Length: 365
Ligand code: TRP
Image (cartoon, rainbow, N blue to C red; front, side, top):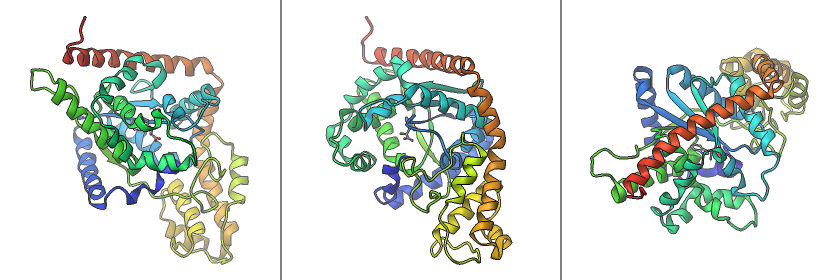
């Protein structure tokens, strides 16, 4: 989740958030019985390396859904990189690094299609008819876009930032996904996606009663809010997180610098002791244990004891992932092959959808 979008809870009304959470629970129950009913799309902007916040917040959930048998598409959203900055940065390294992260955590290219925006022209072309279906007032109201614009400081809004939720609708609809696992900052985009799908069928719908596009639903995960190692918002620029690809020594050094407090007796008390509690929470996630129990065990071991436990927990959890990642990055030809194959599948699917769209619009020449 982007830094800018994290304060979004307030702008998404509580009632609709509660509805989305309740609906997500129903969907989870249904997935257990009927995974074949779902097609999932999600993605990430390749602006940096994936870290433990991504891992606990969304990545491991994707693997779980893949294992449950849900057909999955993952977009490495390279066009989304330039919504709020001038250059693409070291984009190739980032895309390949992200792909290595995905495969290292257990996403399987035989079951999950991983692709990039820029390699799938028909997906991007959907943006044109979709833009005709939304008003500029709707675009300007999007609370996530507003928050993201604010986070860029005085930078003027680019046309791509204003319209990227519609581009994201194209990401979701090109493969007719009906399920999108996201954080709550992305809920306005999902609403926009449903509006686009509905309006497309109202305006250009075929004479049949079968809509071209499904109504995509959010799958909100119950991921706890994880802070950075300094107790501040987790962010790449603060250097307060641990990337999946970091080695064990770097991890130990970063955790050593983590902020704690002066009370040597460790307790789990998120309100009064946010930094210590956050480290306990992280260790709990890594070990699949309750943070309260870990606090009891550390007792008077102080910040040092807590950091030792956390370092071991993270390094142990990530050891196989890091080993796999190192193997993958040593074989760039394989990574390129996986991406080429994913892009090919995405192109076939997008061509098919675009052809239906052109037919619905009467644009077949
Ligand atoms: N905007 C999403 C993020 O920053 C990434 C993304 C791009 C995405 N396209 C998507 C997420 C489509 C869900 C569906 O995390």
